[in-house]
Structures are given as structure tokens and as C-alpha cells.
Length: 326
Image (cartoon, rainbow, N blue to C red):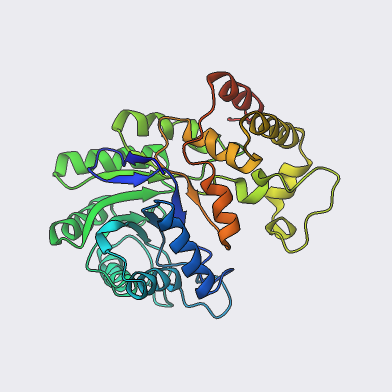
């Protein structure tokens, strides 16, 4: 596994980040432990989670993915400083008005709860999961600055921030002398490009921010298992996902899969691995977030580590993957 510097920080993270949203949602505890151990065994050190994972699932109170990570670290006696743990706060975690948001009132207890579940006294990267337009940015950033000063957080990041809001945050941190966001977690893949590429990518490049894209496989579409005119695989995410069905029925989607397959064959790689390589070849990207329910799924994603595309291959995919941006 190769390692990359996370933005302007001193952290070196594995070039693939293990996402944990599936833990105790679509994978049980033993399967989650197996995936974590296999990832660590392959040299992975970067784990991404959130307090809200997976509160939307039946009988899931949230916080379960963090709990699994904490138990795995304890039960397998893994050194805490071997891993870069990134978690997120801001989401609805209860029924009261202040059980959500980026206010000090919510973030301070949310961080404490995350630390308890993770069984650690600090997180390496604490991210605001979504913008909170109702809370002044000064309040959010001052609360985060205090968390870093206390030693409970080492660096801070933003997730799903538009470019203008991210730049405003960076400006406030600069003039107030607060810690600043050092990373961004955007929705970015070969089928969903404009949201990141329109403005946010240039901001990240200029400000030397780490970029940790989520949904790098477009919800599973870029695995190649969804083809035009063929039935949606039973039990797959595509059965209830309109976006995946739209991709599968579009000319752009099928041309993209065809080109990924062609490039992959030339390198002895799969469609999935080539889709990840498209991200890894972009110098702005730090580490795509991969998810896995099984070791077999994880191992295929890990096959993208160190895989890079040529300039001609990138150009070919970029032309096919262009989407309307107005």
C-alpha cells in the first residue's frame, strides 16, 4: 500500500481509505472485524466513519460503526497510533432540537460520545458531515479550535461543503487565527463529476487540502454489474436506486463501463479497479473511500493500490465521463 500526505498536515495515510458505513448495517460484527483485519494486514491505516452510521437502518441507534472500530482495536490489541481514524459529527443523533447541527452545544457532546464508542482519547480527523447554514461559521470553527487545543482532535475537515462555503470557512480561520479545515470529503466519481470539478477541485488544489472522495464507484454502478437491457441483480443496491438505473440505461454510462473494461484488460485489472485508478491518478485526490461487506469485495478494491492510468487513458475516460455542468 502506498501512502500519501493528507493535505497540509503531517499525517501520512494509505492511498485507499476504508469506509465503515456498512458495519452493523449490511455486515455483521464478525464480517466487519474480518474486513478491518484484512485492510490492516494489507497496510491500510486510514479508517473513515461517522457518529450517524447507521441510524437510518431498522433498530440501529447510530454510533454502531464507531463502536465496531473501538471493539476491534481493543479485541485485536491493535496499537491506536497505527491508525488514522476520521469520524464525523453534525447529523441528527436524537429527538431533541439540539441533537443535530454544527453548534458548540451539539458538537462538544457529539465528540465525547464518539470518543467513548471508539475507545480512544483522540481522533485524528474530525469532520463536519454537512454544512449547517443556521449556525454561524465562527461558532463552529471556534468549537473545533477548542477541540484541537484540548488534544481530543488533531485535525479538522469538511464534508459536502460547496466551494464558496469552504472558502468562507478558510477565511474565517485565517482572520480569527483558528485551526482550519485541512481536508474535504466530496461526492466524486467518474459518473458524478461536476459537483467537485466545477469549483471545489480548484479550491482544494490552491489551498492544498486533502481530498477523500466518497462513493467512488457511483453506488456500485462502476463495478460493471449493471448493464443496459439486463435485469438488475437481485439483492443489489440498484434495485432501489434510481440513479444507478439511470446510469445503466444511459449511453454515457455504458460507454464508460466499456472503456473501463478495455483499459482494465490492458492492465490485467477489473472495471472496479480501473474506476478507482481514475481517482488515484488525479494528483488532487488523497484517498478514495472504499467499502466492503466481505473480504472478497475488499480484496478487489485493494487491487487498485498502486494502479495508475496513462495520460491517454485519463483523457479517454474524461471525455466519456463528461456531464452537463450548467
